[in-house]
Length: 338
Image (cartoon, rainbow, N blue to C red; front, top):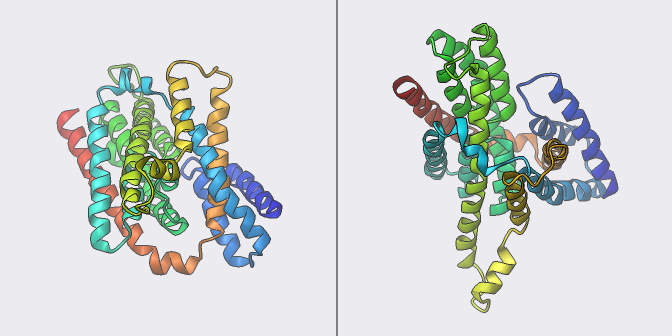
């Protein structure tokens, strides 16, 4: 097992370095891609498999717990209040579209939920969190990540130029980018591009379009707390009917409840009430991203490229549909209401 963990550690370090060279692809996604490529080029021993399985399971949950320390219920207040109704609408829209069209495309219900949740909130972190709660397979996890990846990169590159062509104000671009791009790194990259193209134009609140986008994205990421709690309820209801009739409701809850979510919520509450020192908070974010990167390297080791192209095209198409739904609804908000 140690060899597999060392491989995940080294590839996570490489992924973090490569992600730092550009702003469009985050370290977790780079880690997933490295895991897939390397495992398909060289044979994987049982010893390595034990380590990658531990990384994709246990380390993923530890990373999600740390993510709670980067989120705050209080961030919904302030600048994000104006965007909150649009955020909630898009979260609901994305998940509904993911489930509805996923069923018609023949993908699993878990895949539809992962694609919808990832598009709605924050890409890889949301997919990782939901995967652990609803007990999705590693294949469903990887397909959802791939589905988000392609359209997120496209959105990050395309929206700044589209917004400039449509003569959007900083407020309009901030709303568009903050709502219609999944990953935080991609939102930041799009914001930097727009601010450069618009020569740092500031809006009425004294913020550039890129700064507004990051504020809105922060509020949107906070929705992961509520979606995670909703996923817990969804999972418990679905699993309850599958358990043995000899088990009581309490025993069913004890057996199926994802306890790592309690740690996630505890750190989110601590962050909200200012109980996490300023010196520690940034390290929680770095630890969260690095552990999830290691976990995704482990997931990548279990995915075969031929499966991505033979079985993963439907999830990618589903990701396009959810992305398009969110993009259209956001453009309507921005053009007619901002």
